[in-house]
Image (cartoon, rainbow, N blue to C red; front, side):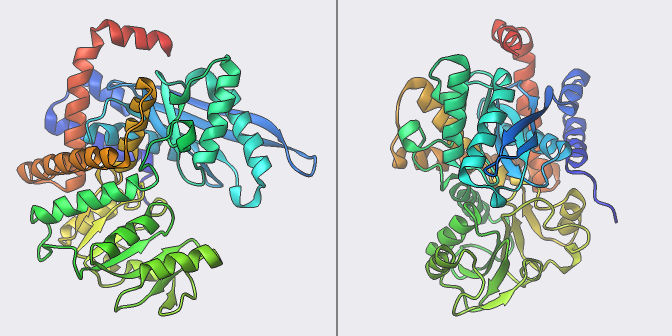
Length: 428
């Protein structure tokens, strides 16, 4: 069966949420479209002296609640449809956790694994020169995503400020601490996911699960999100029985020693062949019998092709679009709860918002302050989403979209007539 494109799937959920809320046509129509789509090309000199043309994108989906916000990814599969979907999800994600930002996303088509650091820097700066007119601390604030990091954000800040002859640290988030980065940013997505999971468990939303202790957990993806989540779950007493990265997976039905796996990956570059475990594939671990399955890699890990093999009690979708729309519905029919990406991984954008606020106010919060604020936001909005799903007798994913669309619509009506909205339009 053919899968819907990520962007079409996102629009279908927006339509369904809008129908239930009886949203005005003009708001519905605005949500169905992107505000701006920028496709750029730019030449970069490679280390061998050759010149290569790169393609990049920046999509700005919606700014009814505030400036656009969303990461920039470097990946060989980056395409416009994917970036549109990710920008749309960012609009929903920001509204779900009730932060005053809209959705944006960007990316460059490349294979960063085959590029030197100097080539990556030249490519980043070239991309920034193309998108500089449409980003900024009051317009669109990028952040790290797949295969980008704090170092890349430093290059973006430097090049953006060079373009305009000013010093604006708030133009991106996810920066190094010495450049205005926030404490806790590295752990934010995984930690936010843990807060969401604990609140779901506390509210008795998953049958037979009342604590994380000794629960069997599978984590697909062992990068900055999945690896940190696996460590946090291990520290909570969960039995992490399988993890994976792009090169393969490992399994131990009695539970992996996650600190040991982390050290093994640092030394060898992958989780495979770690002592005390058996090698497996990414696909195989998705089908393991477990209490909590955590897809934390790229899109479409769980689709209609493998959904019938999923045996988890619940799915915590830490990766963007890891569960396809059709698979989500089938999991629900099987009685498997899915905590969707727009809630589960919103800790990252929440702490990005904290960083932006700190930069604008020229302040620096402690890690404890960041964690406390993050916990309150994630738990409060998780409760609201779960309550909305129960009241409407819908999936948690649709419950999250109902919460988000309601908040966007409320703000849109106010901002349409305000001078702030009109001024913001002039900036764009």
